[in-house]
Length: 147
Length: 285
Image (cartoon, rainbow over all chains, first blue to last red; front, top):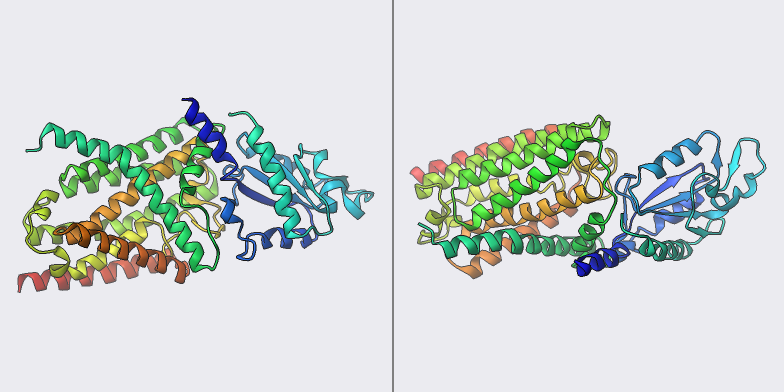
């Protein structure tokens, strides 16, 4: 029994399925995020698959500022993901609101709405930095308890 | 009649060895697909990591029907594989797997999500397309061998492929639809296509998605088993035929774009019926 639980736990970081949500980003961070999935970086080597379904996702990658209109969407997506799950915030806007942080319609960074496990700074961050952030998120993903 | 030992062997191979083999083949499939797309691809054991991870996730259900349907799909897939290894009746195997296919659709339909609903409708159309073709192939096998029993096929002197080459093509056509490979991946959006999210799989998550994955491993083995029947006289011939057929499936999967369900139904039935008719007529000549 313990061997099975250990296998499940070690399998977790070998098979992270990630969902990418553009929370009002300028598309700069999104282009860099999707670049990770191309043959150049080929993140499927590490078992990472880009899914479009929060119910199948383990890692939520969010880029862009949160505003009062889309904060409900972000929270809804997060709630639909089964436990255990990890959130990675991408780019200056996702971290703090970036240059838009003082705009009247902006709530701020992702962590104002949902808990964030890893932050990737940059405007936009390089694909290497995004992969680095996801790897950091994966370490936290492995440590989370079994559901 | 089959001995008790033979029965137990079929049970063990069917229940335990088949899904492991199915998972390995799926892993190999992902690796070869990645190489065709000039990527490196995941490890061969990746499908097992995926299933183990999913089993360890939180159970989220919309209703209890979903769990029930997932289990029935798994049991039907496993039963059909065990029946295959027991060299049972081809028609029986066919109907048992059909029950599983229908329960997958029912599970997806029990949830009001539009993605799940559209996926279920498309899956029904896929079932509607490949099941008549499979029945035609089985009927052709009956015309040739005089029995629906798999043991009857193994009693043949020469491989069926030589007498039923066109029926083998029809089987390949039906199995591409059954495996949900491109150009027929319209119900589950296997790869990066996400316009209906994951279609029929959308609302199954965590351990229940793992159950569907394991059921799919069984289905891969059943499908390749059916293919192997066409070269039943030698083990090497069987392996070569299965490997070539699966490689062809992967190649077609990668070089073709997805088609509409209308094209799938008309082309599959037109090609399937014509080829079957020609093949059966040539048998009676």
